[in-house]
Image (cartoon, rainbow, N blue to C red):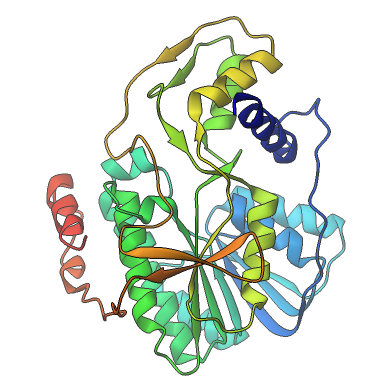
Amino acid sequence: MIEKTSNRIHQLLNDSGLLSFKKMNNEPFVSYDFSEETIFITGAAGSIGSGIVNRLLHCSFKQLILIDNAESSLYYLIKELELQNHKNIGFSILDVRDKESMEWLFKAYQPTLIFHAAAYKHVSLMEDNPYEAVKLNVFATKLLADLAIKHKIKKFIFISTDKAVNPISVMGRTKFIAEMYLDALNSSDDTIFLIARFGNVFGSNGSVVPLFIKQIESGKPITITNKKATRYFIDKNKACSLILKMATMPKLEGNHFTFNMGEPIKIIDVAKALAKIYNYKTKIKITKLKVGEKLHEAVVSENEILTPTNDKDIFIILKKGNSRNKTIDIASLNQITPNNSVSEIKEILASYI
């Protein structure tokens, strides 16, 4: 078991491209036919957004509109794509929370397919900034979903997280509420809402692995929160490949999906693997779990079950028994303002769980 875990960590490290001295093992690109689709990608300059972009470049598409409000990140993505001389790609610097701007964008480009990857994802940051988490993770998702129905978009793919399962954090709870809202919209005759729920993207911007590498390269102790803490990890290339594959699958029994990520991995094992690779002798420093963090994550709740699909790496998440998707009333969230205290906002979010 120890050797198997070690091999998985090394494979994830190789696939991540974080170690410049290691040869990166790229998953082969699959070409899908999106030739009739005008595709929106929100959070296009982020880890998952840019990963989806890079895979779509190997597909046919009518038009690709890349949306982000991170100026520098989007600029670098533009420069990267310019070097590859790709056509029919547009870029838009705007905030997906801006109703007027998004309404204009929908009217101007008339998208048929949306990958919604824009989100605030850092657990500890969102614990201190719940108002911003609600605005982006919930209300921006609602705005885009409502516009998708209004404009009769074919498919809307929402990038979610395992932290939305039995959530205790602001980030997880806002994602949970967004999932519930989209689930309830799947009675729409014109738009299919698909939810992709998966764990930590190994090596993504701001995640724990780049942090460990930075600590090692700067000669500082590697810090982890708890010796027993585990996480589900998935390689970015694999995640993005499965997201595209999921988007092209025929209509199935459910609209909620997760991916094969293997067994959870102890974070301390990742730290030890990196220390060994770098021949780093400084001790690992144990801190403590931060507010909102769990010791272990899960991909389904006790009210859900996993059902296999024809693809061994993609599973449908179904509700147990006869439970149906119910319309969620998020009216109380509308009452949240910057004047509310952090504890008041957290209490409102907790009432939805």
